[in-house]
Length: 318
Image (cartoon, rainbow, N blue to C red; front, side, top):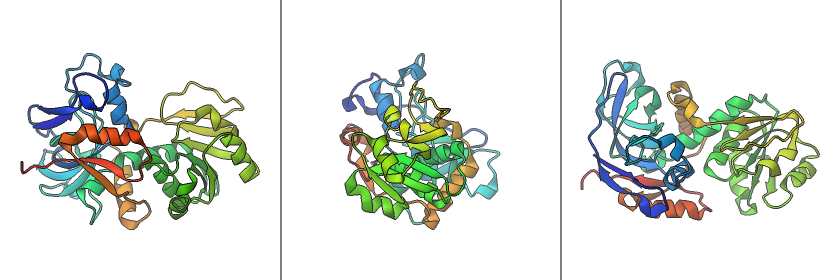
């Protein structure tokens, strides 16, 4: 089967096609014919070598990709028939990628617990770009356990993870404070943000001034770390999505969160799919690239200022 991967770390140009043996589903697995794969910052981290410790001792090519959309081709034994995961079903799947097992693949064997029916009416390209980011946001909110009426500050609020933090937080009755560019104000209000603070210098001080006091928790999707911690109340929480060894003091809990912990959390995946169908969370418009143009896709990702979701598409007719 065809995969897009790398044998050496570096810039986008190291990504290229490879042919590796076809996968086959084991017990409680399904074989997915991938039509589209989401492209995320973690993929660029793998490509550039920031995750090389995870890959030590493994045989390349290393294949990025943590979310896919496609159709089921084969169902392994032991898959619960009530889940609707039958041959031909349109699905989305979360991929805990490692080694040559990654979403940038024409076919992928995945645990049935990590695969759910795709949101009704969504194209493969649109469906491929929401699951990893929405599950990341869900993981943050579950770690915080804020009660309705609690205050949640989201940095990078107009980004993919940030947008889902805003939507899910608002849906749970939180007062969502969004930090993003001023140009994104209309978008963030449509997602449910109640207070908007433009990003820039002295952000914590400006948050405190705008609100008249600190927030209960910060979901730090923009990786502001020590620059945003002063906006959190004593004994509050900071959710960190990449490594940070800082200690803001004042009894603040710094929670290092990794979405891979939720691999196989079928209940969470089904709930997110349902929320995409009922409009609680939004599917961003897709910016598709042919899989063979993965280098161009990564180049566009790293240019930033994206409101679409970059995805790779696989043409199975060629």
